[in-house]
Amino acid sequence: MKSNTFSVIMAGGTGTRFWPLSTKNKPKQFLDILGTGRTLLRQTFDRLSRISPVENIYVVTNEIYHELVKEQLPELSENQILLEPEKKNTAPCIAYANYKIRKINPEANIVVSPSDHLIQYEEQFIEILREGLDFTENHDALLTLGIKPHRPETGYGYIQRENNKEVDGYKNLYKVKTFTEKPSYDLAKKFYESGEYFWNSGIFIWSLQSIMKAFTKHLPDVDQLFKEAEEIYHTPDESDVITNIYFKSKSISIDYGIMEKSNNVYVLASSFGWADLGTWGSLQEFLHKDENGNSVYGNNVMLYDVEDSIVDFSNDKMVVIKGLKDYIVVESDNKLIIYNKKDEQEIKQIVEEIKENKGEEYI
Image 1 (cartoon, one colour):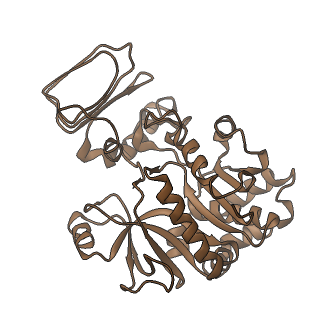
Image 2 (cartoon, rainbow, N blue to C red):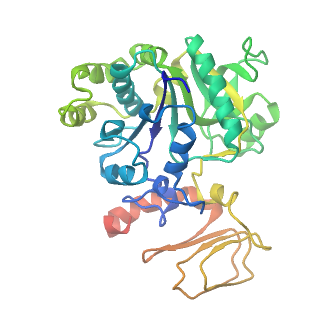
């Protein structure tokens, strides 16, 4: 395990598409949503601790989740929990981590990962990370892990490789040609059939020097805000200064702000049983199903003519459902959703409407 290897876990999302199970106060990364005995955040930390010393793992999260992170990852010091005062997307989050890490080790080689993804085949994943880290240690490159698609999927972003030529000495590693956000079904089908495209996992590997150079070139305004505060990182004044920085910073993703504009971006084509678990439908792919394709949780649930649905109720509820197909029926803390899976992308907007019309206590 190399002391120069650092990991950054992005854990500030609210997971609104998993409402009502995932709420503002306890979003999906802090839940054992797969029933494994470990939360998604804990699983992410355990994986990354195999390639980074524990003291080199940083979690970036919203300040309201401070206690949840401490509770679930007691190995971390306070200094390893980076608290964001407000949501500003992934670029400011990564810029903050960059400057924290640079003060410790300017030669760092970094893995950046979301906190809420499923990785089924951990050994393959670790092997891919090690290959990627070897590449970024020896090249001025921004590397993303691309997942070999097994279906046309409209809920993921896509990465197109530049050509069929692998980078010398690195199997399945290619220069990136284009990024495409969540395409239509017809376009996703073309991407899938072409063999040139990969799903964008949102997992990145780069040297600290390469990513900071990219910020200087493509997001100088964001970089400058964090650079001006260089003296306060790892000091008691950090929190107050970061609040001011986030107030001034624009909200922008690392994909749009850096990756799509850089000419040294590469993709490592991977297959390790990945899913971003962004929706109930994507989750069900990994849940137990009965003979009718239903994933049922709750001791007192009775189904009649119900197919391909997710049904989740607390054990003290007596529930009878008839005549549903492809539905989400989930109850949590006196909140209930009954929604067709084909429309589940709307749930995020529904939660916003609940907040506006009924109050924050319901989200």
